[in-house]
Amino acid sequence: MTLTLSLAQLDPTTADIDGNAALVRDAYDRAAAAGADVVVFPEMVVTGYCILDLVEDDGFVDRNRAAVEEIATHTGETAAVVGFVDRAGDDRYNAAAVCQNGEIVGVARKVLLPNYRYFDDERYFEPGERVAPVELSFESGSCSLGVSVCEDMWDAEYDRRPVRELADAGADVVVNLNASPFEVGKRAERAETIREHVAATGVPIVYVNTAGAADVGRNVIVFDGDSLAVDAEGALVARGAQFGTDLVTVAFDDDGGGRHVAGGVADDDGPLVSSADPIEPERREKELFEALAFGLREYARKTGFETVIESVSGGVDSSLGLAVCAEALGPENVVAYNLPSAVNTETTKGIAAELSRNLGVDYRVVPVQSAYETILDTYEEHVGPVSRSVSKENVYARVRGLLMMLVSNDSGGLLVTNGNETEMALGYVTLYGDACGGLSILGDLSKRDVYDVAAYVNERAGRDVIPEAVFEIPPSAELSQDQVDPFDYDVVAPVVSDLLEARLSPAEIVARFERGKLDEQRYRPDDEGRTVYDKLDAAAFEEVVYDTYRRMKRNTFKRVQTPPVVAVSARAFGTDFREPIINGWDGSR
Image 1 (tube, one colour):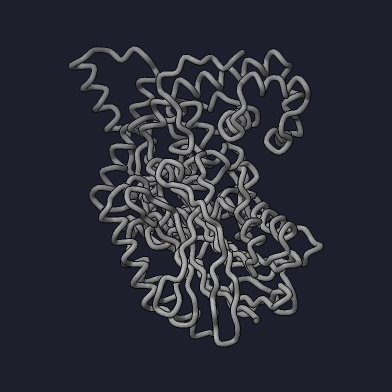
Image 2: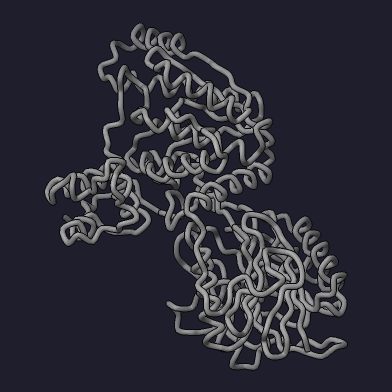
């Protein structure tokens, strides 16, 4: 038979079982009315994927099972494949229920359980053992449906091959339910991984992903959708929207050839990408900007915030941060505050005002110099003279933090922070100052990424939304007169990314420098065309690397007290990178 499948790319809310079940029923009804034989939903769509220790709550798990049974009673001849948490005694399983004609006709349990980054399936679930297709009958014929869950497709590091086992057992098509987080550059990798399975099995594969955001405590996880359908020849037939919900319908003939029917991103004249052509990656800056805006929008919606508050200094980080906020919630729901002191320049104050006008956001100015002086006077009267200049500088940041938190408390808006990955690693943030807020939107972007994505904002708009002066002034925290940041970010930012994202040791980074094998994408030439090899010899580079490592280790205590970070890279500070505060390791010089 020709099998018609709908890919229901939904946006579940963590632990909202009734609300998520309603989304499933609605999408099922729409797909069934349009003629779908099977509707496939994302991984753990009934509960949401990031439920953490809620999975240990018997009442919660039982309610999720009851919701699946209710969904099953809603089905007719059109089958539904629904991700949920299955239970057998005290054991939990990440599973998918196949429902048809009012019943659960099969359950597939996730076989491969990830145990890396923020994935804790191995902690919470037992692995499925039996792998077998589910037999489905329709008026027009029958099919053998292979059902797999997320990691079952990413099997390169495991002993079992669930997708291949399903194909060997006679599956006509394999569906893969996912809650696969966004990671810059991962889009093409997913598609190629699916194609590799198709090449090995000769079976069409339908990959259905979650769209939305959830959290694992100290990280906000962005699920980017981008569901895919690949036919038996390896052609990409259709894909779901990236960073949004979708309902995509495709059809596969008896020979495994596929075609687009409705929804999603497709070309009705043929496949999006033929079997002979590579899957091209998206532009890095575009993906990062859209992922941050989508993550912020979803996080604010799901936590009940209608407005966002942003402190703008005139520097590149807050400029990009404000652009992300305006894109995410609309400029009418964003309030920008400039909090100048006696050491802020007219240039940066002018940039902050111009930026806010360009974005169309509400802009307000709250001078902080008098509050700063009052705090110092009070301290000196009752404690004594302030002996360190950095102590005075941090008062500026903490006055701003206090005022911005007051605005957030009083208005009910979400205060976002703008510290980037590089500055957070180096400890170049002030606790209870610029680190105050409810969400860190740039905390997984390196300083170089911040500049690149800011430039993309202007390119995207076709005008200088972010004033050109932002890219010309030296980076500065402006906490003292004529202050500039004491780092060469073209060198330090990629070192931080190597330590964090690539998980290289300081010794490994130095060894790569000595062999001329540093990552060329990370260690790009600076604006004057100079490479890290032009700037530093081996001894000087080694000192930069170990100084960066020592700073990163010394400032762990700050990072564990900062807001959750929106994760968009291969590794983000937060739950994604579990670092001890007490750490005697010297980096293996």
